[in-house]
Image (cartoon, rainbow, N blue to C red; front, side, top):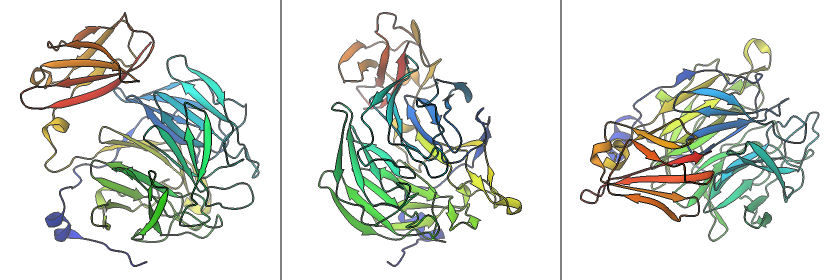
Length: 400
């Protein structure tokens, strides 16, 4: 399918988004260098687990960019390229390659309050690694992957309340290991990968979870790749990194406009040519993308990484609600929820809800210190607003 690309001045005239920053190095993850890890956010904290030769699990406090080791992923086995995602304040990890193309299907949920794991129903498709995973409308979707013998085009939906897997219509791109993608609005966008673990692809597709239907979109520009990174910020999707076949790591990144089905190269997102950005892991929260681990082929050798980076993407013309936000100090919290931020005086209403959406606390006085000792341990959402201007901003916090 022909690729559509908008470059330079044309993109600025037609779009409302441009990049305002570059990648910043943060502390390395304390685990051994690896690739094929998974990552997700629970509240404002990033969790990273697994990878080739690893069953470790770490949390990054994004207020301080410091790491803390958590309870290892169960099973007492390494999990390369496992399935990982978060739903309703809990993390989920399962499957993965334990070495030598020996794969697993067992699945677990992680409670960040208790720092403990609970076994769940095995993955519905059997043993699996190298799949794309994401969450939408309270459910998880697992697309493609590898069963130890073949790349697959299966699509599975996970419903956490019932702990149940349901197979959906197959991926339109066919058999694919190491695909990548993102969610934009109410659609899932997935592409690239490999049909056989060696050759790479550029095709790209849109999935509607409500109708269980696929349509093909414009191919990702540049060299065909697998094991790349995908994420979405505001009204744009992004894809980049990855590897061409098993020869070259590709540091280029592109943005995707779902409204016009067009791609634009993003040089500010690019990494140095010798960077380890194949089979890396990435997750986004509040316009900040965290990316780390991965592999490269420098000096004709396969090298793994423990490095981590972050970048903040700022829209041109962001709504005031995105510009005027606040921070939570020391999350998770014990007895007092402490807020900070120069824009706190702009808000005149505070509401706190539990993860099910039930209102727990409400006040028309926004203080920097809010007692929460009466709250049960769990995940909560705090929302600040202004009745006159319509300004709103919300964060998620964990009560210990």
